[in-house]
Each structure stands twice: as structure tokens, then as C-alpha cells.
Length: 214
View 1 (cartoon, rainbow, N blue to C red):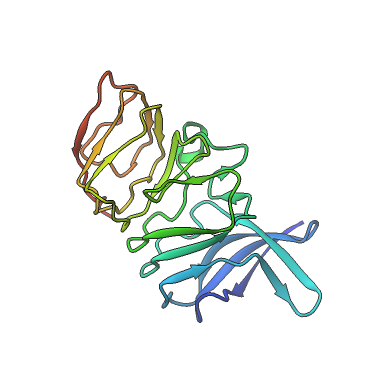
View 2: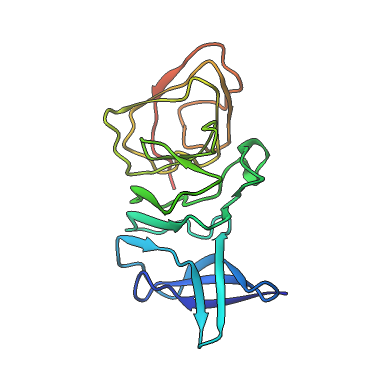
């Protein structure tokens, strides 16, 4: 049986997270937030929610778009035990087959710089440039809006890449993106507002990227 409830997040005083609870296996997923303004800089997501001395629910993931639109949040810390990050799970990594063609994760969070995992996740990977991808690196889920690279040019993987919808949402730190010939897919509203939605271009392309108007 699934039920919804709202509890106080331990990471930011006054910032409430909402959860969907599974009473059968005593787990829950983060459904959204409300009831207060986020006043910190780091959102430290919980591994469990506890009511009283006996009711403990293991937090197993984040539902799609549950944590969109949070201003002021610079860092999100996620337990590696989570088995769902938006539309991304161990069985669902290809953005081409996801609802909305993207991860549905941290969109409209203009100040986000870093996602930190507490441990090593098994179904996602974070590159040295701070880009959240699938384990094989082909599916780009999220480029942090305020992530500063060593240069303003981002060179994508040469082995083939699929860019999910909203992957570059709100990013204003990258001036040029260089795509490989093996680019397979760009989801709608990926944040690449100067480009059409290409499918398998014959040669590398580059251009200036603008922040989405939201």
C-alpha cells in the first residue's frame, strides 16, 4: 500500500520534503518539497525517515521532478543506496526511452554546482567534469548549471552520446559544446536552444549555448 506524507528534512531547517511511503516493505521515495524556503546551500538527502521509536522507512530514491526549482541550493548529497534518481534506475538508463526523454532531475535549480554521492552509486556515473551520466557514459542526464569547467569549451564523448531533455537546463558557464560524429540523440528542451534537435549528424558541430528562458 502506498501513502503520501510530509516530514521535516534534517538537512535544512524549515525546508520540508514530501514522501511517498510503501507500507508493505517500509520504504519511501522523495516526492517533492514544500512548507518552507530552502535557506542553506547543501541539501543532504536522508537514507531513512523515522517516526517515533519503531516506524522507520528506508529512502530508496527521488521521484521525477521532485526536487526541481530549488533556488540557492549549491550542493546535493545523495546516498549511494538510492535505486531511483528521477526517471533513471538500474533498468532505465537510455534517455531515448524515458518519459519526456530525460532524467527529470534537478531542473530549474539555477545555483546547483555539485552532486555528491555518499558512497559509490551502481547505476549512474559522475565524470571528472561533474556531469551526471549513465554507467557507460553515453547518456547525459545533468550538467550542473553553475559547474565551472577548466575551460569554457565542453567536448562530448567520442564514443556516442545521448543528451536527455533538460540536461543543460539553466547552464550559463559553458560557452561552446563540441559534439562528436557519433551523437545519437538530443532530447527536446535539452537546454541547447541555438540548435535544432539533431539525430546522427555527419560531422562534429560546435556553437554557443544560451541559458533557457524559464
